[in-house]
Image (cartoon, rainbow, N blue to C red; front, side, top):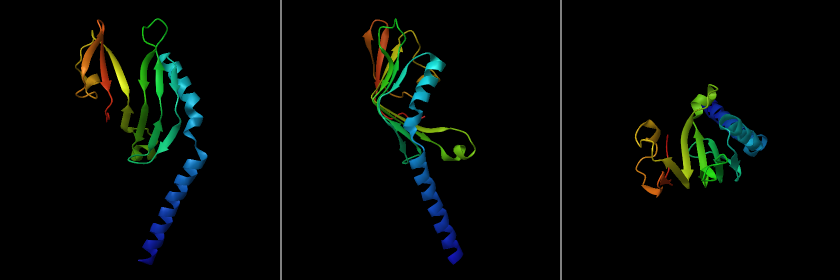
Length: 152
């Protein structure tokens, strides 16, 4: 029994030490420019992460950020393709141990979504929106104000 208690205490201390090292050594804000550059290279749009990126531990290990903006290209009538007031992403732990990144939970607050009314509002791409209110903003666009939690 004493061996079990010592083993449990040792593993708990190792876990606490790993969390402290993670928090002190790795600053998520150091990767902000790299994320923005990767988005620019991938989809040719400017991503602005205006808030700080911070660690989250509850309910899942992940990251949280303040305001995020994804700008449209020149020539569009709206400056932002996407603007989010606050976002957090939770990662599943077991795939991380295998070297894979898998999103467990994605939370977006203050997320206005512009949808072209020529697109059908059915299909798997709209399953994550759920019961949102759509109403016309202009003749050629629909607006959806999705400010609730979206879990993928």
